[in-house]
Length: 422
Ligand code: IMP
Image (cartoon, rainbow, N blue to C red; front, top):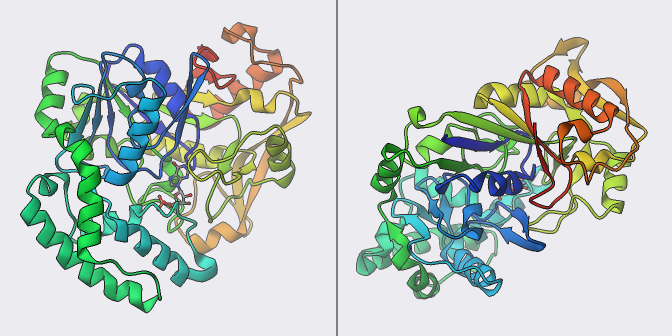
């Protein structure tokens, strides 16, 4: 079975854990978009691993992990991630980790450009992770980016980097931000690239061979549908297609290679960064933060928390073609008295079952809720669906009906074993 795992909310849905769970039966785990803005926390055998660019399959022996062409790769960030994971006892060899030669390179100045853009937006800032993701994708689309294959040809790469650094310095100077010498960018980039060069290859024929040989492929989505550049809450989005389609354009495998799409979502909603959040709720945020939950894996920022929003999830299930829902963090709601679910928005007196494209409508979108009784019971040791309290099952049933997709997994804790297969 070839499976896409995609986030259905604003990222941080717990995809890392579901990927890790499904990796057991996968042969190849592939990232097709995003960069080290992503943060996947996986807890395996009591050890916590935080992954940014590395596919979650890296924690297993004998799995192939691919960073596809659609990813933007920061060599400095990846090398420090590799060192950190290796220091936790995981070996990362060229046989285990393959990097597409078509992946675009995040250069040090992209991070400064990210900061410059945020400054210029003032109180309209996106709240980016400042990892240089948007500017690197912008260079890709603007056809002035550097790809991993270019770094294999050092004289060519040096000329390209020099040209682009000088152009970028003009923008940075305007914002009184630090500028770069081309030599600095080149030396920092190549110092890191040395560790990565043996991993860089044309991943497309390798992936096609794996597909034709009947290997099981797992596409690991990063971020979430509402951060998708096309389908998200634009402009408060990331710069890639985080939805299922990104798994094909970002890897070179065709849509016909995909057999199922698992949509991962929390039992409630969270978001970091700026932008619309109709079901955001201070009481629920305080409650979850007091439990020590909902702090970002990449930045440590507290995430805003809110009630389940099935307007957004219904849309996310549509655009991704979700065949099964993986609901995570159900245990986060264990002690809550009464749970709300948003079923539609009221915008200026008219009912919306799907999110608006008009960005000004978000400010006027008032959630229409239904309320369900909580279960007030610890679910963390439930191992089957039947073990769950009746009110938790009723909540999940309503959830599934409103989203129009069946539930296939329920997460009741951070460990690999706390995942119920439905
Ligand atoms: P960027 O991807 O750093 O450009 O940030 C754009 C938006 O996406 C910001 O709101 C970020 O907080 C958000 N974002 C990016 N990556 C993630 C993620 O992995 N989880 C949650 N939010 C993310």
